[in-house]
Length: 282
Image (tube, rainbow, N blue to C red; front, side, top):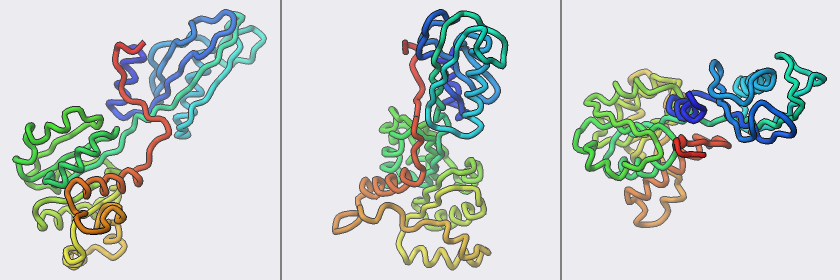
């Protein structure tokens, strides 16, 4: 597998990795400047020159992975018999500088329960971000290919779930996933809140609705055994409040924008996000 294939595979699977580039060569070296390899915690793909040079690069790349480093770094190595080395001798006589770039291949998961007017607008905004976007509805009509056609050019990986019992899909979400609850049915919303609170490893849990709706839900959830500290995990109302000031501020698109802004500020962005690349990349 070439480094290009490996890069796309890591991105698709969400596996952390480091892109190693032979950034500069002075004198003789096994490979020319621009050579690349990809390193994961257990595998490597392609080569920057073999021997001590490559083994040292792999060792350093895995140290970056182990510490969760996000910033790139430079590593300069001399290829002479007088240079210190831990992995055999290389006597090419040159000196090389390697660029090691940790890859933000792990993408967050965001689940939107209810793909009505607000849900679809929210999906349109979130689809422009590098994440896994789950769209879940108990109805089939909101999930038709024609209705979801605005997402055809999504940057996000979109997962569409027709789920007559939406709580079942919630149980399948990975740890850390963010959940936005805005279905057409308050009974579904309440059941999803109950199910979400039973998964303490989830991330953000947002519920659309009024103060009166949340007051009723709190009574139901307390009756299901959820203590006050658990109820505090649910954010309601959702969306940055400054976007809702004044009349005429409750259009679906504006609500979606406010919710997306809140979500992205909570998710945080990696310093270095690398998208899949085309095989035509030089």
